[in-house]
Image (cartoon, rainbow, N blue to C red; front, side):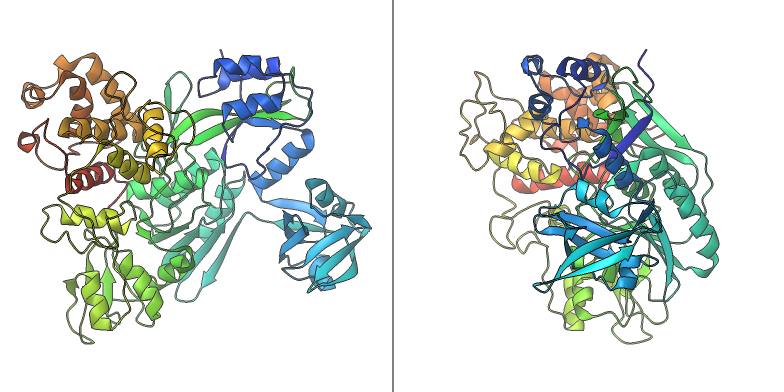
Length: 631
């Protein structure tokens, strides 16, 4: 029976420890706890390490590590991000030059004293803080009413400010009303109170709101139960999380909280949005509750448990060990691990908020343009700037209709983004490929291009009829899954300096590709259809927990397949059948995951024929769309 874990945290640790500090925890004790809880396999070499630093470097897991009591306290402050402290009232970053002031908070003495964002604190009470460390932050804290002197560098000049420490409350979730009936939710982390703050704000302002805009940019995560309750507050009761432990056991988590709003929802994300933020974003995507705008998220699909003096008092006294204990999956059974969450509208970070605002400011009567990204319809604000319109149109895949009226009051008719841009006189740069119009898979190829999941053979050119080598397929798939590897070389004929070596080894490490025998990979050989479909089946299993379970069952008992499906697979090699079966059949259950995820009917596929670039693009898109990762 495993010990009770006091805190399960799915947070990207901004306080990444490059070296384990001196501690009361021994290597042997750390290994005992890793054996009991760690999600991944522990390498044999770990038992030969002599320090915690060596141990955690060998594991190669940036989320598993030891923290002193001081570091643990700072970590909890980071996760909570709802702070009730006595200080001067500034948000800071640690830099080599000193403590950089990011923001000056209302109600604090820093604002009253004249400190500004961009100022750098280089000394506190005469103590230098270059480079800045956590211990320097502690010098600014103290009892309410006491004074502290900070030396500030601004435009090359230093000046002392003597400030009075005050109690400062910083909520991690704030709601404000924007013009046009937009409720803006700024959520910086998922702390203990996040879902309560959100529900209070939704209930207070929902009657005044036409759209809710939830900003998860730079939100690195927090407590998973807070993320689950946030999803329920936006979407109603549901099963929003699945945890898989080191033994492969999967547990689902349900919230029965009623939705606090039914208004249209837009999420903002970026490359720093991680963990619990990705759980919320993928839950909104899976249920079709709203759309997501921004850049691909960080890709942290594993959760950590913190062992401390509460859960393991025999090991800890104020300090703790944070261990990766689970891989997590969203409402639809998909994991954001490595891959991240791909937004409905993939736009550069600087355009995420302007594009979102543009979608909240139009109407059926006044707008010249309407779009249907995903399952929701939006009218575009007619006063939107041209560069924002370009960013919006460039993010539209072929599967998402764009409507435009050529004259005010006329009918909204469907056009391609390029056609709309031309009619509006916009300087438009399409992400679609110029040479795929005659391909039967043109929409799939252009969708993959829109989401920047494919690169062409030249700018704007895809060469759809080109054959694909085994190495090229690995590079193509690694881009989709957002993985690469600079570690172990799995094959003797994959040179470490080859342009494809990282991607081939990454695919091998994930178990998605095999060699051809004798320790070789044959990188320049063409990919056969049955090889490609097998890899796609494994990819679907890697992403989706339900399909993985189904694939294991099929592999153990192929005779359970329906006769018509067994007949369809009879032309394929025995080693390929169970993985291809995942693409054909899938499951229909509570997660609503089902096939097929083939780019064309199995009866038209020659198992030993080479795979063309257009077929590979279409096959990848079929899997991503089948799992609702792309619209």
